[in-house]
Every structure is written in C-alpha cells, then in structure tokens.
Image (cartoon, rainbow, N blue to C red; front, side):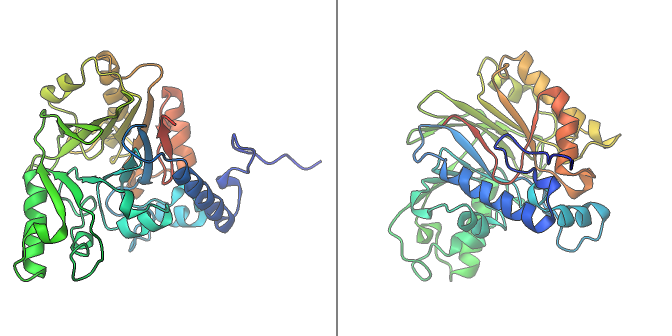
Amino acid sequence: MPAARRTDRTGSPEPGRLGPVLASRLHLHRMRENARRVPEGGGAMNLLFLGSAASEAIPALWCECPNCRKAAALGGRNLRRRTSYLAGGSTLVDFGPDANWQMKEFGIDPAKIERLLVTHSHVDHFNPVELLWRSENFSVTGRRLGFLANAAVIAELDARVRECSMGRSLDALRLDVRELRPGVPVRDGELEILPVRASHAPKECALNFLLSGRDESRILIANDTGWWPEESWELLRGRRLDVAVIEISMGIRMPYAEERGFHLGAKAAIAFRDRLAELGAVTASTQVAVTHISHHVGATHEELEAYFRPYGMLVGYDGMLLGRA
C-alpha cells in the first residue's frame, strides 16, 4: 500500500510534498483566500503578510547560492517578496519594490487603503517612485491617502517629488503627511499608532509600530531592528498583544543566530519574545511570528518551522493571516 501523503490542517497536500509548480499554485490560491478574509476598516485588527523577505527577496534576483536554488525548486512558501503588511484591511505598512505586485496579487483595492505607514527609508521598505503615480499627471483619483513616517522618509519622498515632478510639492500626490516620533501616539481614524524606536539605520530614527484597533486588539510590528533600547521596551510594558511579529534577518546559524545589532538572529528573536513576555506584552494567547527572512538564513520554510516550533513561534510567509477575524 502506498504511503499516505502528508496534508496540512485543511486536508490539502503540504506544499513541500508537491512539485514546485503545483506547490506554488497551491500557495498562491491560499494567499488569495487569506486576502479575501481580511476585514475592511480599522476596527478588526488582522495582519496580512504581503511579503516576508529581507532586502534581496527569495530567491534573490542575481544569486546562485544553494539556498536560492532550493527555494526556486521547492516554490510555495519558500518564495518571499520584500517585507510589508496590510493591517485591518485599510493600513499598508511599508511600501517597497514589490508593492505593485503585492497589491494586485492579493486583490487589494487601492481605493480602500486609508493610510501608509513606513518604518524607515531603506529601499526594501520604501520605494517612493510608486507614490509619484498618484499625481494627476498619471492617475485619476480624488482620494487622499494618509502618509505617516519619520522625518527621513518624508524628506526622501519630498526630494524625489521635486526631482521628478518639476519642483512640485508633496501635495501633488494627494497625501496627508504626518511625521511620527518614537513614544508619541497618533490616532488616525479608528487606528492608534504608537511608534517605537528601533535599533537600526543609524542615520535616521527607524521605527517599529504598535497598532491598536477599536476592538482593543494590538499588533506589534518589529522588523528591521536589533535589540531595543530600554525606552522602547518600557513602551510595551503591560500592553497585551494579540500579534507580535519579530525579525530574524541574521538566521539560525551560529554565531549569527545571537546577533542583536541592527538586525536579530533566531536566538536573539526568541530572547526578544521572552523579554516581551516579562513585560506582560506577550501572553499564552499571543500569536508570535518571525519574518524579514534572508536567503542567508540557510533554511527552507519547513526547516524554519521545525526550528521555531519548540518555542511556540510561527514562521511568517507571504499570504499569512494573523489576528482577529
């Protein structure tokens, strides 16, 4: 009798057990199904992963390393675009070089996006060119878009607009621009945003975000950071999280797994989760997932799941949906 095929919790064959083409098609179907489940508006705080990779994506465009070759061969959840999210159906977090593809692939209606939050100005998280197309020269839209970011990101966008649009101002893009500062909460519609200082990008104040919806749910987005300064930890004290997303750019191999500088390794990410638990932010009901995964991690999605499973942590992938329904 042939061995039974392994299946996921839906009864479908696991992507890793299929050929790369079928695995990728199955994964794409699931991504689209998750996108359809995202509620509209800022009340219910679901978090949809639009991308889960570090700056090069996986497979990296020019890379011939074994990890990229393996990801291409396996397909499915091993294929990763640059890290970004859709929160509560109306808030984009980060806007990198894959933004156009992500919006179309997940069936996101731009007219329903109320705001864009940007963590920092690095090109894998902020591609200002795509915002230039909001000008009346290129697009027909009467809707304004909230744009919330640190001073460096705003300056970068302003410079790009003046360079490419004959000196026109940011208002030509129909953006409502607000500067974010660490520790200063901002309410925008039904969403409360608490910017948290990250340990990243020394030339600017890179941010992580604590997002709170009207249903009192809370989501922490902590990619592109090393170990936080104490002031950042204190902002999370006693704030119970429904979802916590933590980066693992430096991977699972020693000694990089313990890296805490401008990025985190896997062991450091586990310690990061434990510190949040000590502060009462992470509880037994918190969904904790890792993301911002580099091809240098040296592991498949399935291998990363096996690594983090004993710690009760999930591994992010493009199309993952966390939080409340």
